[in-house]
Each structure stands twice: as C-alpha cells, then as structure tokens.
Image (cartoon, rainbow, N blue to C red; front, side, top):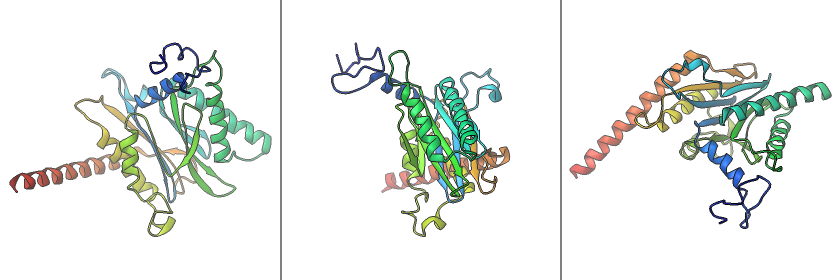
Length: 273
C-alpha cells in the first residue's frame, strides 16, 4: 500500500509508513517530464538556458510563455515544470526583492533571495489544503555589496542549494554529466578561477548540451531561451542577443555532427579489426 502511494498521497501533509511524502514526489516527477533547464556559473557571470518545447505546430513560438524572467535588476530566474506554477514563484521572488529594497534600502543578497523563495515553496508542502509547486527554479544573482555572482536552484520540496552548474527537467542527469566536464569549479580547475570558462563559452556549451539531448525523431520541436548576468551586461540580468544564440546553436550543431562522424569512424575501424 505504501509503495503505491494509495491512501498516503491525498495530502502533502501525510507521511507514508516509510517516511515519504508522495505529493512532493509527484511534483518532482512533473519537473522531470518538462523541458530541460540549465545554469552555469562562469568566471565572469552566470548563464541560464531553457529548452522550451513547442506543443503544437500551429503555435506562434513567441507566444508560448517565457521560461526565463527578470526578478530584480541583478537577479533572474529560469523555470521548468508547470509553467503556471513557476510564474507564481517568479511573482513571489519579485515581491521579496521589492520588500527587501524598501525595508533595507539595498538590493537583496542572492542567498537571502534563494532562502526566501525556498521557504515559500516549502510552505506549500506543509498544509493539506495546498499542493506543492510542480516547478523547479534556477536563480542567477549578483550581489553589488560583495561583488560576487552565484547560481542557486530551488526544488519542489523547498530545498535550495548553490551550484557551479545546475540542471532540472527531462535531461537533467546527462546534462549534469556534461557540465561536470567543464571548467566551472575553481577548486578543480588547473589555474583556479582564472582558468574557468567565460559566459561566451558558457552560452555555446549550454546550447550544445541541450541540442545533444534533443532527439528530433522522438521529441517535439523546441525553442532555445537564454539569458545572462555578467560583466558585459553591467551585472544586469538580460536576455542573450538572438544573433549570439544563433551563432552558438550553429557551433553546437557542428560540434555534435563532428563528434558523431568520429564515433562512426571508430565503429567502422573496430568492425574491420
């Protein structure tokens, strides 16, 4: 009975005998079935990217609803899962940023904003009259006081962590594997923070990861949405210019094709041997 969730999944305030909250797990499953959202903390900023599936060929791509939103001058979020749920999280994040500014006269620190969003999301897992948010949120922020940029992710359970590279959605696991190969962790990079990739390279790598995960034979067509928060943008959250995205996508497709050709040649050589 407990393993199937029967009787224990009627309320988010009910634990199963083995300590699980099924409604929170169902919310996480909704995120897993949605488009991939990625974030990279680079040397000179943060890059966000979201795979926005086009559910119907008759849809006008620009009207399908944004997945990346600006919360404050120095903060932006990418959402995946139930987009309508994600919009409520975005609205709450904007309210928190405004209230902090009005109360303290300064921009809200990234960690404080992430903690307040996570507390709000967690609240919806505590009451039987509410349901958990079926959305994950990637938060890119810059703190003018400390001059530090950061990337956080808030999950449907209300848990929030800071990341060098974060992924949510359908392709999260292979995306994490690919991001681990990049020079984004200053402790693991050979030359420290100076040898980490910059946002320009981050845009190309995220475009490559998302296109490599997309199977045109099985998956629906998608639109790539990207933003950055970096030195080049004056540490303001802005959308990546369309020509930069187009150039990154062209580079990514070329890299993927070359990798596939090399793989085919190696297979042929192996068969000949």
